[in-house]
Image (cartoon, rainbow, N blue to C red; front, side):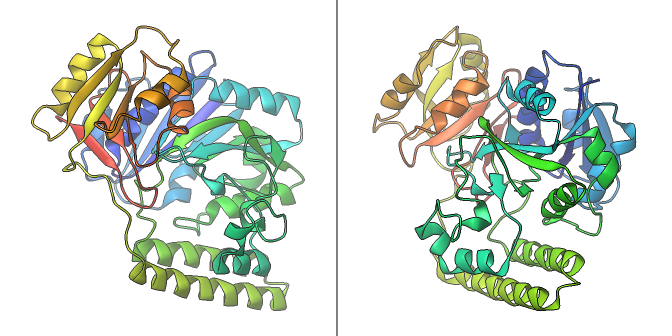
Length: 399
């Protein structure tokens, strides 16, 4: 078997539904298996997902042991030469996995591979590639110098700003939302450090892979959607506590033999935590897309999907204002961008099947600002979307 895909779910059944549909399509040309570990969701994930995906191996935990433990718990059950740790709030293009596997075969020193990620609005997620945390990197990020000099290898080292986002490169840290490892790397590292409940485990695993003599690579030639805000709200007090606590744990684990560096790191991490708490209080919140907002939709898909969409939108304030019906994948991105400028429209609904996921991902990166992108994977029972990477997005379903 070529690839084993492990996804940990926690109360995001509709986003996972779309993720699985995109993953299954991306596995069409490869020998792969999909394993989902549910961390005691209370949103009806088991009843909703199990009948829809008979080919997926589900594991239903009775408690929530954390992200790392959940991933590690099924490593003994996988048979792939490569293992992908994938977040449930993602959509992958059709050629994503074949490109990744091809890269591994041509780079024998590759222990782990990450990809270019964009959020639900099409904006590049800088955490797709990062450097190891240092006092300087943390300071420059905290005071804003990283944003002022986004391509600097000195000021923007936290997000490896000197590495072009659309080019393949070696990088120090990959994002846990999409980490594909060779079997060798998994055997050496034994997977995630289970002392990290959530956050920081990807930094730790990336570092241990490089310490083992292997390399981490960032693949800029393929792009996935990562909605980000679904499992955890980035600006919540819980996020701040868990994130900065995880970074402190990483520093204590790996920098204990360097007391001065450890002291400086803890100092800047604590300052960053305080700054994050203050910022959450004083800065106005961004508009968050929610199911009560009125969406005037420009529809892209085929006739059968339009019938399903109208059914899903029934008894909601949303409606299809315009429709563009396509039966093939020849629609140019530029046409989508031009038509989305209609002031009467505030959202675009992309229906996979009439349009490929690859084209959808390309298109959302060129949409006008404040245009809401919605997504419908063929045969899904829901519509999903997000216009704010820091907050949960929207789902529309009759279920």
